[in-house]
Length: 357
Picture (cartoon, rainbow, N blue to C red):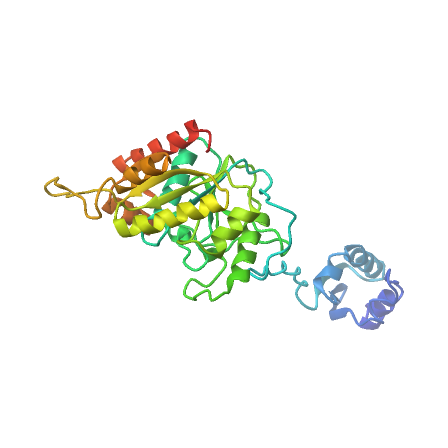
């Protein structure tokens, strides 16, 4: 006598599941077909996670049906009613907010030195100097980090050629990005690049605290902090809450820029932060056609100011079209082998030899 559907269901009904019930009582048998001595059916688990654990039950069901009289073959497929449950998403990271209390100045774990690069006013090339100096130091074998602390106008993501949002596996720790041998972090990587950041001072201070304390910087010889222009909340927070090695001030030789550079130097002095040196940016311009050298913003003003104030003069950098193009393209000029790359290498070696990088 040929096997019937009822015979198969009766055999399956005798198999107890580990968590109670049977395949039949829990309505897990689907597409049961009997064709002569060939039996086929599907075991449908409630979800993929349960299905992954039911292979022993599938084998037991196959053996039970195969033991029936007149059964010549058995095909049992194990499937699930729906997709596997998604792993919980990593907690979202909130940037900004009021700073947390701390006992005194701190330094990120593993970071040996912290250099602030500041300026009295915007537009003097401070961020360009910061990114190229970081790359030049990395090419000299130093382990370098670059923190873009210009909250309102972050430019390092563009200059360093990165745009990926940093990961945060637990909603607290921030995994920085790497570019051109430099470990870098910027508020610009965490925000919509087309949206303005409209924050009051406490939120700026909180964001800076997060980027210093929650970023996994790893082992670094030096962390370069690209400050916003001026003498505001970010500068104050950094100098008071961080163990700074010192500051470098960038200025053009123009009198108007020097007026503000003096204020930046006075701020660092007031906050007991050593000024390690001055850099004169946009010092000269050499015509690519005729080779004539012009001093568009004046020349030598920063050197004279450094001498007058007893501060080291670290070097003069010219206005250079290739430097601007390289920054816009996301590959700092210091990553190449041009004359400007050599100039930044010289600057980097001077800082290394001075023991500050």
